[in-house]
Image (cartoon, rainbow, N blue to C red):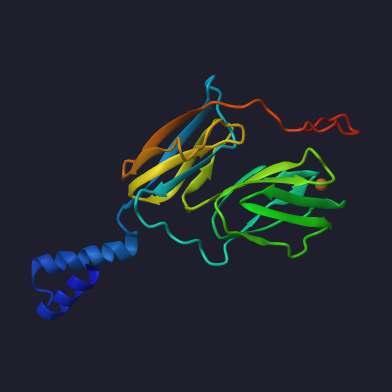
Length: 234
Ligand SMILES: [Cu+2]
């Protein structure tokens, strides 16, 4: 479209007021950015008792539209610090490479038996080049063979539009192009399939806001023993 009026402009000159205003619009766009054709989806995730659910992954997949491919060379990092995975919940788009640096001065042995990505990084220390491409969508549960309580999840989704909720159970998927989406929420204790429970969301300049109320299974994370200093870790 832009090309069209530029051609028209060059063939008829700039005397017409319509073309002049087109030129003005063109330069306005150059200086002030594109028009608002993207918005955000604000999401709240609660449990059945209305407690906010931190660490829920919310993700929006274009309804019938094309999903942009993952950025080439996209990397994410799953740290190991103080015998815990950081972050505990991480979402990535399918095709993203994830590395597993060990910031402790002891060895970890990271593994997953999840169908979406089965792997093992035998005992290592430091930050060897151990990145792997997560090429299938799904939930990947991580563990450490040495430290039973170490647990984290990598949620691999077929879309670049996702976010993780904070302590208040709220999350925002930002810079998402206007259009219709299937919006899903995942939590590691949820009952049911997030995609089967997905809702329709429409993104426009006004944005969209959605709420999920999830039924949870009992907590199953292995509790970490108190440390020597008396400080306990979960
Ligand atoms: Cu470990």
